[in-house]
Image 1: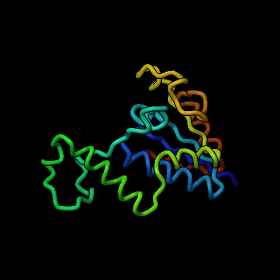
Image 2: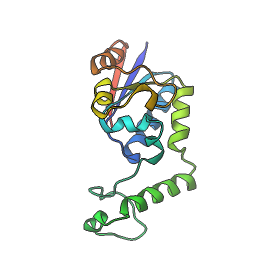
Image 3: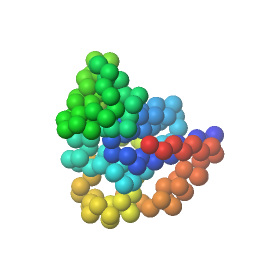
Image 4: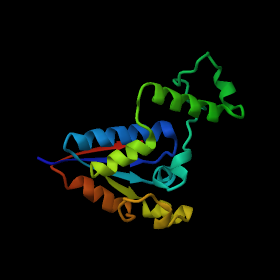
Length: 159
């Protein structure tokens, strides 16, 4: 029985993109067929340059652990996004969590289908040349949903 996992990545923040790739690569390693659909700001996760600079936003994220308690209002201060991103990357390194670049490579190695959204590409003026190697040809939502729906069991997750 084929299980197909469809992961929709709409956010371009590191704290949303990482779990999407972790679940995608885990499902693929378990023998499931996985397709990830990157739309709107999520498209930056597979952009050649922009994926290297994804950030963590502490604004509106009260569950984010801080080394010292920080009132939520202070998260809007200049430099807090860079601080939060640096802190997240440091925690990942300390706990040996793969980087985004490593997760992208794992996804490709595990034959996860990486689908860029054609509509978002048009909206942001991206071309296929702007994207990392190994992604599928840009598709619309109907094509992605058809991929997910043709499995014997389908699971759809949104990030």
